Structures are given as C-alpha cells and as structure tokens.
Image 1 (spheres, helix red, strand yellow):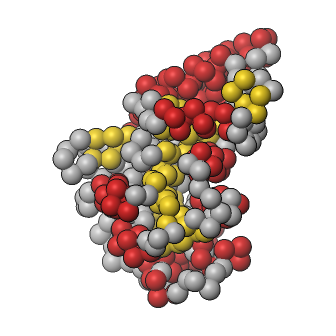
Image 2 (tube, rainbow, N blue to C red):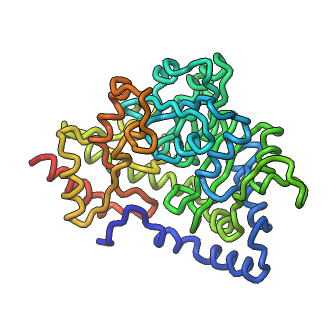
Image 3 (cartoon, rainbow, N blue to C red):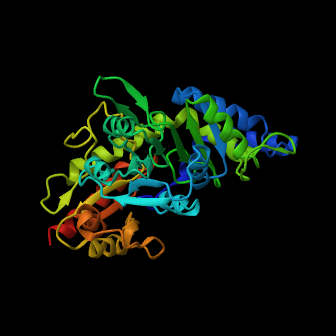
Length: 384
C-alpha cells in the first residue's frame, strides 16, 4: 500500500506535469512574472467556469476576504456576522479593519452557519454576513440572502473551501458557490480543491462597480500607473501560480468527483456505527448521493460521539494514518478574539464539535486499499 498522506499534491502533479512545466518554462523565458498573460487567461477561464461576471485574482485568500470588505466600504465599528466554527482568517480580517466581529453558532450536521443564530445577532449596526462554505458545501444561501434583503445587509461568501460546489435554490435553479452573494473570496492555497504551488486567491462578483473598485484596490489603488485613486494594498496573483491553476481548472470537476467518490466509500464503511456520525450534505441526504453536486469535500469530517476523539487521533497516527482536527478551539475562545459580549450558552454546537470532529485524508489520489485500511483502523478503535 502507498504511504497515506493527508493531501497528495505530488501524485496529482503527475497528471498535469507536462503542462505545468511547459507553462512555467515559458514564463521564465518571457519574464512576465506579474500581471502577465497567464494571469489574465486564468481570470477569464475561471469567470467562464463559475458563470460570474468578474474574477479579480489576488495574492491569497485572506487578502481576498479583506479586500471584499474594503471594497464594500465597511467602516470601523460596523458589525459583521460570521461563524464561530471556522478558520481564524475569517474573523481576522474583520478585526484588522477595525470592524466588529459577531460570532454565531453553526448547524450540527452541515457545520455551516446557523440561520436562526444569524437572525438573533442582527442589530442596527450590522452591515454584513459572511457565510463560510465549510469543508466544501454551501451554507443555506436561500435563507441568508432572504435575511440580507430583509435587513439591507451585504453578503460576503467565504468560499475558500467550497470552489466547484453548487447551491440548489428552493425554486430548483443552481448557482456555483461564490457567485450568490454580493461578493466572494476564495483561496488557492496548495491543499485546496483548486490549489496552486504557493499562495494565491481571488474575488468574485457580478457587480460591475464593485469589481472596478476592487481591481484598483488589489494594485495599490491604481487604475492608471502611479495614479492612486483609492486606498489599496499590494495583492496580486503571480504568473507562475496562475499557470498552475490554469492546468488544474479543466480538471476541477473530475478532482471533485474523485473526492465525492472517496467520501462515499468512507461513509459506506462508517455510517452504521453508534459512535460515529458521517458527514451529511446540505440537502440532508443519508450519505452522499450519486448525483451530488452540493459538496466537494475539501475535508471529510466525522463526529466521534464516545468522547474519545483525541485517542482516535493518536490511534490513527500510530498506524500511519494522518488526520486533522478542524477546528480544536472555537473562535470566541481564541485569545485574540475573546470578548465579553459572548455568552457560552449561545455556542452549544460549536463547543461540542471542537471535542468531536476529526478529518480524514481527502484528496484526488486516494485508492480503495488506503480507504479500506483507514476505515478498518477507525472501526477497530470504536469497537473496543
């Protein structure tokens, strides 16, 4: 059996090696390292894939989220509601801009932001909602957009983990994740479903005026060289990263299909054990249906219900199986974001999840032998 890896980027590279190497060689020959043809071509191709009017590439996913908020003109003291159970970058940029983060609980089955908790948290100071499409599936965007319309709020999708997923609206129409709210951010960190070989990110919007503002912001506030019309930052996707992403983008749906296939195999082996809860899709499916397009499984995350999650982590590691705990500490308990405004009674799900969740190896190169071994080691442990 091959060595099990949490993410196997080397194996994935072998399938696109010739195109990647050729493109990088051309960039080195041309020396078009910043804002070169590869960047512009990738932008257009991603716009077509997502069916969105504007993609603005930038340096990383955290910058992308920050620039979304800058572009919307949010001001210090404005309240921004987001999920307590997610990576810190989501709340980090809110704090950096001197906005007021308002953390709320999540759903116990999808791990996405809880709609009732959002509504409860809205005040006259609320200006935006940031739903995080956690682990690879969209939050409940029907309900979130309804709340935003009702209260005149911006919706900024944090799509760092969800690219390629689709959201099915109540009327049966579908949209790609990251194209539903007013603006969205994504990350191309190497381990993402669409990842480059360094840092990278992008912003999506269908708003022409907002796109124009953001295009200047990512490049020092310039629309014309040395004319600084808005306060901006230095956040650009470099040509080499764009070349890698161009090689991967035509394969993204197949990459996501392989992730779903691996997730189905995991769930099939693990779903009937009393101490294990397998992931559910946003549509409430028992497992992952064959036509699933709502989840792209950036992570495959179990809940371990017998109070022995940490022991399971050790057991897997002892048997050559990497795994992850995403996330071990709620954001409202992180030292940087502790605030007397928060009441522990408002976070029952998050406070439970941080003790139960475990994410298994998930990538395009997983094979049946590896999955069988991983699930056998988990079942052996929980059956003790």
